[in-house]
Image (cartoon, rainbow over all chains, first blue to last red; front, side):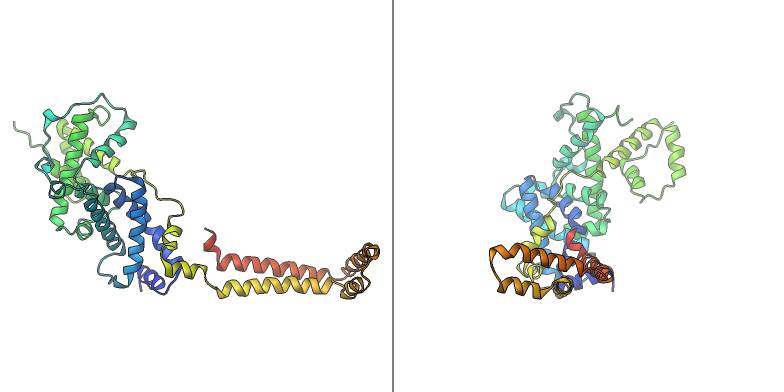
Length: 190
Length: 165
C-alpha cells in the first residue's frame, strides 16, 4: 500500500493525527488556490477550513483514480467557484474568457506608470495576476507554484489538457506584455 | 536577409521543458539575435517571479481549528487513550512507592492520636529526623525511583510526542 493509501486508511479509522498530517501536507496547495480566487482574507481562511472539512467528509469516496493532492485541489477550486458565484463575484465573461485574453494588448488603454523598482515587480505582478480571468489565475498558480502537470490541472478545473496548455500560454503572454507596457520593467528585466 | 525569430509559444515551451528544440540550438540563436534574447530574458524573469509564494498564510493553529469543527475527530481527540492512562498510572505508582518506603506511618499515627498544637512541632521534627535517617542505605532505591520517573517521562514523550508539535 502506498503512503497515501496508508494515510487515508488511518484517517478513515479515526486517527486524528493522521488527518492533521494530511492538513499540514496539503495546506500550501489549498491556500494557493483559495488565495488566487478569493479576495477577502477572512473568507480565505473560512473557505480553506471548509475544504478540509469536506475532504474529511468525502474521504471514503476517494478512489485513488487521481492523486490525493489533485482531488483536494479540485474540492478547493469548486468551493471557491461556488463562493464567487454566490457572491456574484465572477462575471460570466470572466469564466468564458474575453477576446483580450488572446494575448493581444490594447496599447492605447494602458497608461504606463513611472519606472518601477526591482522590489516592486512582485507586487505589480500580483496585481496583474489578480486582473486575469479566474481560470488563468488558478492555472498559472498550480503550474508554477505547485508544479502540477497539464493533466492534473485539467482534472482540477474540468478542462481538456490542450485547453489548459493554451490558457497557460495566454496567461503568461498577457502578464509579460502587461508588465512590459504598463510598468516599464524592461530595464530591470534586461 | 529575413530573420526567423522565436515565437512566445516556442520560448515558453522551451522554458517549460516541453520543446523539441535543443538547448544548443537555442543558445546558438540567442547569441546572434538580440530580439529573441530580450524576449527570452523577459520570460525567464516572469517564470522566476511566478514561483514566488503569494504571501498568504493560513493561521498557525489552522489544523486544530479544522479538527475542532469535525465532531467525530474532536471527540476522538478529547477521548480516553490507553497509552496515556498506562503511563500516568506507572508514574503515580512509582511516586507512591517512593513515599511509602520513606514515610514512617507510625510517627504520623502518633501525631494524629496525640493531636495537640504544642506537640505538633516536636512530633514533626521527630518524623522528619526519622525520615531523613532512614535514607541511609536507600541510595540505590532513590536512584532507581528517579530512573523510573525519567523512563516514564521519556516514554510519554515518545508515545504522544506529536501532540506537542
